[in-house]
Image 1 (cartoon, one colour):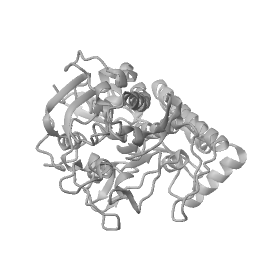
Image 2 (tube, helix red, strand yellow):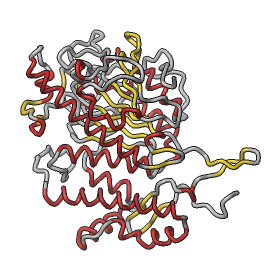
Image 3 (cartoon, helix red, strand yellow):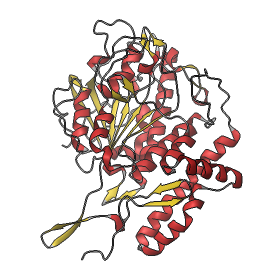
Image 4 (cartoon, helix red, strand yellow):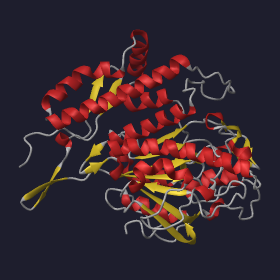
Length: 453
């Protein structure tokens, strides 16, 4: 039987300065006629990329056995609740992250090549050149279907000019998303700004008025769309009412966490005059990562974008991690020179990062969509374009792929690929799965085999 009425997929709850997109509701699902049988159209497939700097302690990253019976090594143990939802991909290489005649600068090349598969041109000035990143190739093809073609996130803003690594511009180390060969996509590091972007309308004047009013009267952005929400709730079925309530509760909970960070943890870092004004971010690095991860999840859930990147830290980051017992800088100890103490510190940093990944994946898995979960309709790549941080090698990279890509990926396995298999093959395969046609990408030699069997 067909439904008597249907809500358009692009429905927003609207109010002063607010445009709150909605998750996929039963009342939105288009129906395709299959002979005499009506079937709901499949949810869209999303792609996300989460980057970590300075390589990994590979001895505690790589599973010992292949296939579905593998055990999670120390670094990956936080992923136990979602082990069945991921692939550990061993043996992938980014050849264009190597020297290839350009000398030192592995960190700059690592961030640049991660999603482009292209060699960064060694330059400190305006004449930077890399390649279009896979997220932006996808955004060009499928971005027209959503409010935002893509969403770029991070926790460290970093400089976009000057030298950061052995003759390479800081633009290389501080970005993984490239709109074209000479234009990196600047990432947003302030949770509040991302929240306002996702849930504000297109009128800057109204957005500013709404934000000022919320701050003055301690209101939520949801207070401005309450009437719309009540009207919609009265029209939909019980299952949709529950979905709507859970979604709006999640939005409010995240908004509350942002407010707490703003009230208690003002950022005191003084930046040069050509940088954006300092913003309030959580004092807790873990909370900062999780809030930005929540933004990615909400953006996918509400289908305001289907493409996102997230730099957990800039490449070469020398941030310390005292909350896991590491007081030295990450980049410094990545040059471990075989020191067992530094090996142990690196694996604790790696495990901390993977713990945040586990949080994001469990959030995606907890959200029902279609016949499964939101995670089932995602492809989330996590990893680095350096393997061992001391050797600065670009082969045998620490890479994972989570999510089933709309049912096209068989997860819960460790796959070991032949030496020198291009990581660009994985990126090409992902483009095909989101409906972005491409014959090749970066230095690909074809699609990556074995993802579906």
